[in-house]
Length: 77
Image (cartoon, rainbow, N blue to C red; front, top):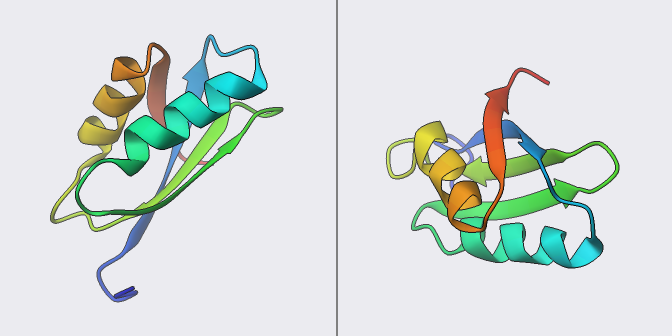
């Protein structure tokens, strides 16, 4: 992991109501080239993604969550 170029992006997701939804989001976002790790916090609807911002943008992450079937947006916290 190259920590000098890695960035942590926090997304707020909507519409997931079960633990299997967490797996679906993590799998879809984790497939993106440049994503190093994905952690979905079910209780707070937070999606934390560590990624290379030169290879994958916040918009790419939002699109991947949408592909998994859920709405999300970038969040400051």
